[in-house]
Image (cartoon, rainbow, N blue to C red):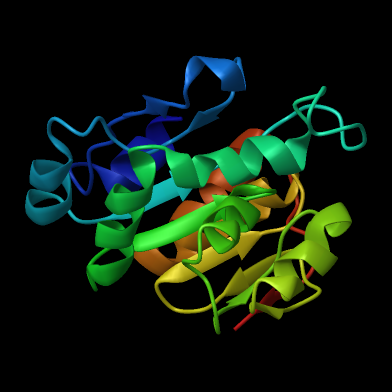
Length: 187
């Protein structure tokens, strides 16, 4: 661990900021920032915004069951949507998504014409929103980096570390996690 600290000492500071979806979405969260200070975070400290997906049933009557597609679609009804528009318009911010996070952004109209991936069960829906679907674990489309399923999120994180801090740091983290990257990042 100290080896990693030495490699990136003073290079970055991490903040965890979140906005919860409305209470009808239960325990699902999209990671962005509270509306009260989002402008400061994006303008003063550009970097990464990570958007996770949701967990829940895939099938069911959407009027009776909060299925994953219903939860992801509700993202477009939250205060997170204008914040994500702002993040995606800022060239110094990279938006990264894991699993259904890209589907939430696509369903809100934010990814049309972009290259992306989502969980394999949502690829048809992602394509229907106008996204150029890529069948890969991680897709790097410049300021938008997306990962397929949950475990692809590890590959996404290591890819972002390599982009920002080089291979020594990402290999040190890979070793610390006792994890080997899988697949090729699509660029």
